[in-house]
Length: 308
Length: 248
Image (cartoon, rainbow over all chains, first blue to last red; front, side):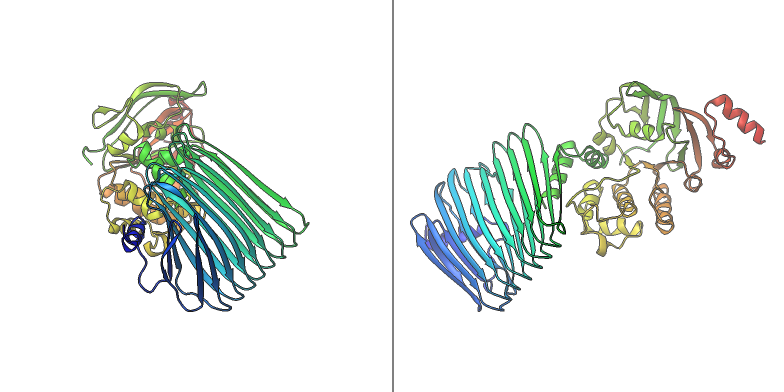
């Protein structure tokens, strides 16, 4: 398959399709960079390596990128490995949103490893949305790892979504340190089926005064899928505020666990948590069934809402 | 929906947790009329509504519930809804992430964008402001109650059971709900208001007085309202006759 055909096939596998010609974008297939379109103020250097790439992304001081930067990481073959080393620097006062489309539509035995180091400098704002598209048979081992440092008066938001196709096995490992008056938001929405295995380990460290952080995990598991969520917020500064929210819906023979950890190391900090795991709520089900939906239709609508 | 919405309860008795809840209730709810089911807390009003809707949770079941001449015995909730019965809960459910628009369309008879707009406008909610909000804790109880009623209007049911339609509702919103009840009646639906509020009772044309799992009286709204006005609700048929006799 030619490079241009591969690029087309990758974008076609994504529900939103290829972004417009003006959008900043980088397309990576396996260990090859197949396309790059940059905009002023955005620098991307990508170096091909044996089993993946090393990408260095920098948004220059004070630059605000009006439209999201699209990065397509994918593999069309059934088997293989892709290791992405991502280094992102948001310089002071900059703002950008990065949409990572990770697509493995034909995977039978694919390992996708993301190893990210992200620096969000003082006054900067960075949001990172990672949406996975997998095929109907799973077959993907996803290992996203990120270490993030957020300066003062800055914002960092990350959303991880895998709600179409089979998960395979996923093991998220994110840790973020947040400075004074900064805001952290980490969201994961994952739907598991078959014998999928989902593990989330997210940690937010609120180290600056008035730092705020929310960790949200919404998971639905069906069939024999398993989910395990460990969400931790540690607050070490005065007036730091944090919240951990974990909701898991379990159907069939699936199992789920949640371990919200809140640690407060300053008397003027405050952190809360809520976690709920269980089958679909009876009252929600009965309400929709009393409008004529079958039990399965009602459960699916409720789950789609939770994962939206 | 096919059928008229002629609902008949025949000598219905059921229990939960070993305790009798309904003790031989018989009643007929006619199409195109607004009925009220009134009585003190614990009388069995909500249980009767749940039983009509076919909700689970009862151990012993005797008697029958008949819609347009067909028994509903063994008919599941969703099939009862498809036959035209629906229920609005006293405390509506909350759904994280489920949009008002999708909630209304889920059970709507006609699934068009205009359906959502029309249903929300009928309960006095601005579609531009509400259609894309989630039916979650960010909405007040009164807003969720109106959205639930909007979903029922979009469903165009034959039999509507409204459990405590005034709870958590301010005066302006209550007037909207009363308008919606009149709309349902005009559409020919059988409306059953479950209430212990005199204001709600006054919206009905016919009322049943329920106490301790039995219907102890039925008749005009004025006659049933008289029990409330005297703060005297009898708990068996003989008492009811005495109370009613003393009043005349």
